[in-house]
Amino acid sequence: MVAAMSPALETMMLAFSGDGELPERALFLGAEAHDGLREWGDLTGWQPFKPKADVWDAAGFSRSDGLPAGRWPVVLVLPGKSKEETLVWFAAARDRLEAGGRLVVAMPNSAGAGRFEKELRKATGGVESLQKHKCRAFSAVDDGTWDESVFAAWRELGGRRVVEGTHFVTEAGVFSCGHVDSGSRLLAGHLPGNLRGSVADLGAGWGVLADTVLRNCGKVERVDLYEADARALDCARENLAEFGGRAGFHWLDVAAGVPGEYDAVVMNPPFHVGQATDVGLGRAFLTSAAGCLRTGGRLFLVANRQLPYEAALDGLGMSWRQLAEDATFKVILADKRR
Image: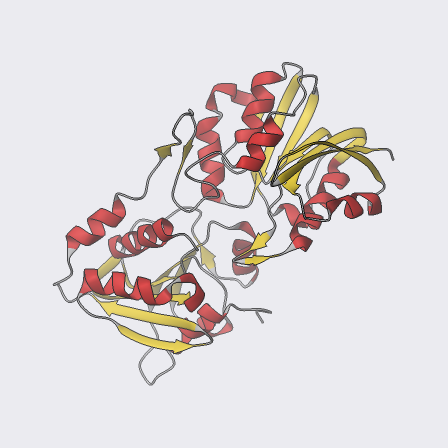
């Protein structure tokens, strides 16, 4: 049995709770496990976020590592929280829908479900909609009259784009896709050039901190990037290609622990789950960092100034000091003494 399900997913399932037959084949973009899906036929999921992908896998459903090729009579979409990402996923769903097929979307009202329902209606001419659990599920059937120019415009929002003023590429939906995050920029400016040996970048995103270490620290043999968003990690592979074997890439839920031992860890830990602040997520990153550091190893982290990570470091037996701060962020250096 699947332990916890999102309200948006519960609302989506209501769209299939009538007397009609369940789909024999379906594709699920942003797949999340639900016990009701066990009654379906051939179901393929795509989920770029590792913790949710792990739950999907553990439930025994079939998953594609990348956006799969082919077409399906039903395509489900549970999009992320950014506008561009949502519209890109609408286009991806359309590209994988059979003629006469049904596209079904579910979103929280707080994420703009009503607005995105209007967007889909603009492309399809009409939608069916239901509301429950402070969410909205809306769907459209391809009747041959959809406005393909709208989907084409959404499709153009996808793909890689260069971050202005840098050599980095990103894509819609990944963290800080339009600019170098201010916290990461502050931390990068305070990383010493004398790092050596092996380094882990936890929650590495598209590779800003790893690039700084590899470019400025000649005695670093390797940086392993650990990132839960497969799309961000793919961008990092492209961004760090010039460093060859000095960079390693790992699709991993850092909060669940990090394998190996490292001489240093750098990180800009996340502290949001969806739209909610979750200080516990940052603390889990600190625990994982402490667990993978060798004795005498150093942790360099940046965090919003109000986050109480110092107490967590004390609890982990690490000594720490603040290296820098600005109006929003603080940079902390912590040492593992035992």
